[in-house]
Image (tube, rainbow, N blue to C red; front, side):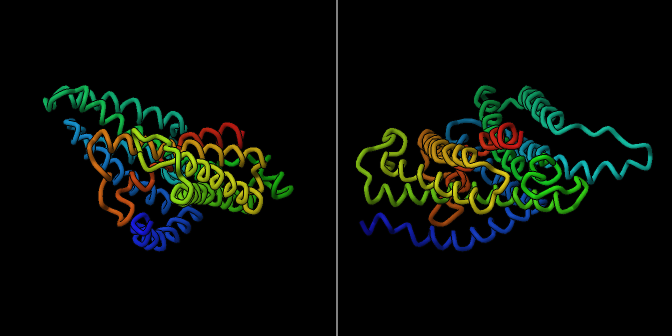
Length: 319
């Protein structure tokens, strides 16, 4: 049993440093959160392309990283618009792309440019090179960009009617509305982070103490159904606690659904990343974080659930 806990000390040491930083930046949002997610995404996509190289591919690493940055910025649309439009307003104003238009322009043109570059590159199989490049852009870049999207759904984009229901009868121009709802965005992201951490922690200790039935031995032989069940309820319970005490805009059944999404798809994301590593023949995506491996190892669940949660929060919770 002691050997099972041998990796615990470095994991806890890293967590004591990283968690307060992530919590603070997530709560305040803005450019700091964009830069945090951007750093995670750029390191993550670099790790992904290194694993792709182990499969014989030659992905367009720099191109993929540039497109990842642009996708992140597309979900930071409102603040970019607020900064750019006034610069040209005095000269008659400009027409700025809407968020969806900006995203589609970046995403679709990136695929066109990628294939044009591959045409002149002469670096082996276009199926491998282009396929892995696009896969990395979507799996790491787009999925993590949707986390920025979740954070920016609050504040200026938050539905005024929902703000009134939770805050009271205030003017939509009142700064208190913006600050209160933007704070809810920070707390929502924190709830997602903490739910994932509690899911991982509950699954880890539940599996160590009770695990008997293998969950998916072909992909991850150490995970058990018992640990997965503990992780699921850990995620759900954490999300419900956040809803009760910190997220007045959210209803009970919505928090329950978000917790279930994290408890199920977060653990599936862990398995998907394990499958990628197994296919590439590596133990960890890198050795960047002591006790955790690489960025993809540490944030695999967050990467996988972010687009699902973005769609649910935008189209269901805030609709």
